[in-house]
Amino acid sequence: MAVLATPGFDLTPSAQQVPLSTNYITNFDFLNQYLPDTYEKEFERYGNRTVSSFLRMVGAEMPSNSDLIKWAEQGRLHTKYTDVTTPTVAAAGTATFTVNDVLVPALGSTATTLEAVAIRVGQTILITRNVTAVAPDTNSIKAIVTAVGSGTTNREITVAFYDAAGFTNSAPGTDKFTVFVYGSEFKKGTEGMVGSLESDDYIFENNPIIIKDKYAVSGSDMAQIGWVEVTTENGANGYLWYLKSEHETRLRFDDHLETAMIEAVPAGIPGSGTPIAGSAAALGFKGSEGIFYAVNNRGNVWGGGSPTTLTQWDTVVSRLDKQGAIEENVVFVNRDFSFDIDDMLAGLNGYSSTGASNFASFGLFDNDKDMALNLGFTGFRRGYDFYKSDWKYLNDPTMRGGLGSEAVNGLLVPAGSTSVYDQVMGKNAKRPFLHVRYRASETEDRRYKTWITGSAGGAQTSSLDAMEVHFLSERAVCTLGANNFFLFQD
Image (cartoon, rainbow, N blue to C red; front, side):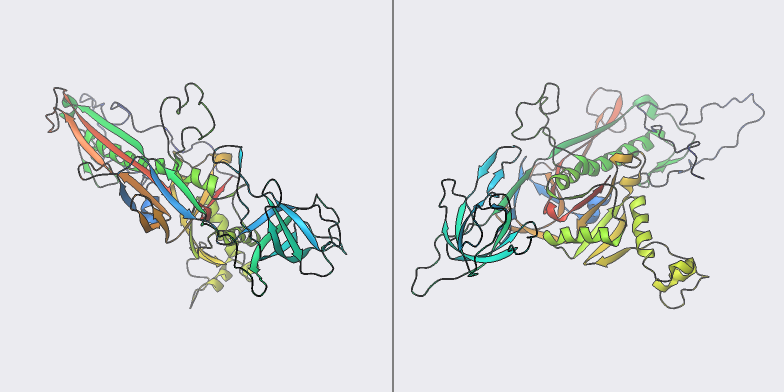
């Protein structure tokens, strides 16, 4: 058996540009002896309909006085190359390696740029074959660098092996190696290290977008008293239907302030050429880097659903080990992903095969079979602490919920803050991994603007016989350290 498709949940828009008879009781025939009994207050059948609160939980809001936000993130401290080749023959005491990792693709382009090899003469390195060697070939060996940039491409290093037997390589020119620096060695009475290394920073930027909304009602309609007492999620209530619509416009705008920061994408890709006619970029729109976009491009992505076993979670942990290794993380999940985590953790109970009542072994004191059984878990530790939190936005059928193969099942967000160099402030600053920057100055604050125009509802700004409520915000989200985030999607 399964949940039947009919009757289903209602996706018919409740927000219309005009009041409709389907929204309010209008048929009162006083010649009818069977007058209906009416409930004064509308029933809130969908509960709390708003989806915002995610960014308020994990981030902060800070002002910015520019239409471009830039920040720098630290690079790696140590150097490691994984695409290194050599034509060295077996049992050679020296070798020349070509480092191919220094050919780095330029941002937004397939073209590559040449970077200098960050290995210097006198440093000691470990060389490992990327494919396990077949005996008697050597899989790894240690060496000292004797020359750098000896080739015309400036990508070559010459080394002398510490192993007296030399380096054996069964496939010169085709095998690839991994090389990293672990130290240095110099003879007595020699000069010091030649050359120095500069810090490798990554510069990121984002631009705010302007978000607007408006509600309008004529002065005549404002004089009409409704028959049903209305209420909204923010506590507004009364018998005036236009009051409900104005408050729901505000709630909808509040939701869009958050969902725009989650879903926004830049208009066009830098370096991709002239945008096609009619596209957003061709029309002059900039777009912005939302959270999903940033994590998809600079973070970690789990494809094919969600991890449902400890082995799969170990893969997630292994990737986090290679990134920032943040100790505490919050996983914001949809309902299916939440149940997958609950089922995985419940299955770890050694007594689960004898019946649900024995799940009490997870509890304390007198958690016996007659008590209400809690089959949900709030978190677990597997290398790191993972706290689980339901994300309504991913479940709501009018938003991300029910998208099938395009669904986002969850987002792992590191807890705490990180230190970055803020180019506006000109110094290092502590910032939450996720935070919103809004345009503001001493005379103009565009975090959340609202104003009334027209000649009704108290406004006296124009001859328009209506009340117009305007909403505006200009903001962008900064996803710092996106390499510490994980996006779980189908």
